Length: 252
Length: 252
Image (cartoon, rainbow over all chains, first blue to last red; front, side, top):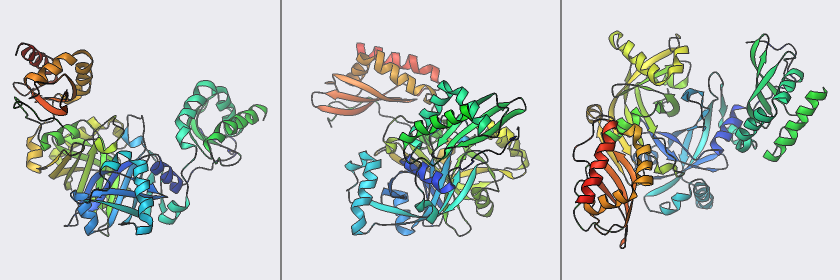
C-alpha cells in the first residue's frame, strides 16, 4: 500500500453514529434478537419504521419474538446495508441495542405512522388486536463498514446524528464520476488526496463530507479521501460540490 | 377466495424442515443472536457455511459475538431468502436455534472446508489466531414462508430433511412457465388443481413436490397446488415432470 507523499487536505469521515443513522434510514427490515422465557437468544426477521432515530416494530404476540418482547424488553436489531458485493462480510451493517417500550397514547399515532411509512403493506394487519407497536430505545450502537472499518457509538450519539443526505444518490454519483470524470478524480487525488504521483483514481464512495478514492500510483495502490469544503446538507449539493473540487484540483 | 369444486389431486408441500434446509443451503449469510455478559441479546451479521445441516461460523474473539459465544454457547441464526418482493415480510425466512461447539480435531477440516466453500474470501483470515470456528447444533427450527405460512420443526427433523433439489432453478422455471406455458398451467388447474372453471393460472412457486398456482375463475381468485407423480430428486427432472403434468392435463 503506497503511503501519501503530502498530507491529505481533509480526511473527515462520517462517524459510527452517522453511519448507523444512514443505514437505518435506508432500510426497512432487519433481524431482531430477543430473549425467550429461558433467557435463550432468538433471532427473527422483522420490518421496522423509524420514529426519529428509534426503530418502531409491529409484531404479533402470536409470534415468538412478540411473546419475548412482552416478557423481557431487551432487544437488539441488526440492519445490513444493500450491496452488490459477492462477499457478504464486505457489507456495511449495524447493531442497535436497547429496550423496547410501548409508545404512550401521545406517541402512538406518530409511531404507527412511522411504521406504515416504511412498511405500507402493514395497513392490512397493523390494527389487528394481536399486533403491538414497540419502540426501541437505542442505548448502544455498533457499526461495521466492511473489513477493518468499525466503531461503536452511544445511544445519545446515535440520536444526535443525522442520516447522510447524500446516501440516496451516492451509488449513482459514484458510477457517474467513474464513467465520466476519471481525469478529475485523478487530479483530486494528486492535489488534495496526498498522492501527487497518482496516475488514475476510482471513486469507491461518496458521503456528505467527501469522496473515497482508490488511487493507482507507480508506487502501488492506495486508498485516500478528498473532502468537500463544507459538509453537504442535501443531495442537490453533491454535483456542484464535486464540480468545485474538480475545478480546484485542475487549477490547483 | 373461490373454493375448489373438486378435490385437488395432490397437495403435498415441503415441510418446515425441508424449507429450512433449502433456505439455509441457498444462502451464506444471516444474523446471529447471542448473549452478552449481562445476558442481553446481541444481533450481529455473520457469514456461514454448512457442515451437513449445521451452520458453521467463523468469528473473531475481537468481535462482540465472538466473545459472547466463548462465554455462552446459546445462539440463534436467522436466514432470509432472497426476494424481489418490495414487502419485506413477504420473504421466506428461518430461525435455527441451539448451541455452538468448537469442532473436534476430526471434524475441524470438514468444518473449515464448509465455511470456505460458502465464503471463499475467508481464506485470507480464517487461520488468523483470533478466529474461531463454531458449529451450531440446531435444536429448534422456525420457518416463516411469508404471510400466513409458518411452522416449526425439531432439530432432528431439520437434520433428517434435505434441501429442495429444484430450488436453484425454481425462479427461472416459474418465469418460463408463466411466459411460455400459461395454457398448460390453466389446464393443470382445471384437471388436477380442483378448479375446473379456471380460465387462467399463474405459477407462483415450484418445488420438488409440485407447482403453486394462483388461479383465476369466474367465482374469483384462488390458490392451489398441482403435484408431480413422484417427488423430484434433481433439478434435471423438473422440465420432464412439468411437461408430463401438462400432457396429462391436456388429455385428462
